[in-house]
Length: 350
Image (cartoon, rainbow, N blue to C red; front, side):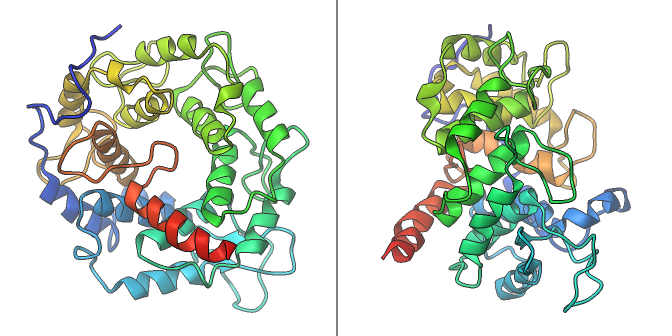
């Protein structure tokens, strides 16, 4: 078990990250990406989410945006699909839009893209007034299965903890839980727990760092974290994931994204003080691109938007004083969460 850092409330000496270079990286991701990322074309809104969230944590939003925020807001709203169908929300991109009036069979919303779109709008300062909140919230009913899990889309058979987490974030942002059966949802999450007291994506699957975060964060948003017993055993499993950085499963190499997935899990369980911050920062330095900016999955690899943002999020989680504070369950900054709750939620409730 790694030794604990002396404090999570102060920046340690290993903190010379290239933050200004990373701001340029995220701004560039909002304009152009290398050809090897073409497979992400149908999920462009997630790239926007990682990039905007990265700039937000770096305190470069909106000044580093390569174009006016209103243009990006308009593009995100163009991805909103509200029809007579049961499921409404946001697409990941415009690549499947063949008609502005008659959607084709493959032009449909995705639960993860809906989450990313809503958060991106918040980060850009939008008031969500053009979001069809009640239609999107009620859509979750049609994506939730009798098991309590959620489908990714109406056409998909994928259903696991990733989409349970997305559904909970959507309900939290919209301040409307009417589309979620909380008891079924909680039961499904607990059924995904393994003999190691961590969580697989589905029942009887191998425990994994990403699905463990989704389980704990969803329980936190559901206010059901107290339903989870054997938390000390889960904490032990999480701490065993740290060698220098963190890995997602036993006998796997450290990967920069797990500095967030495992780190945030420990934060939600109130045990973040047990993380060895110095070692984690040493590993993240090894994945940091000193030329292009951004962070990669592994040392000596190419940076990508997901690992770049989650690496920054991990540093924020550990209270780096050059970064804004991040909410450990919602994956975006605390001040944006506060604006959501104090301004938008109160207005919607009045």
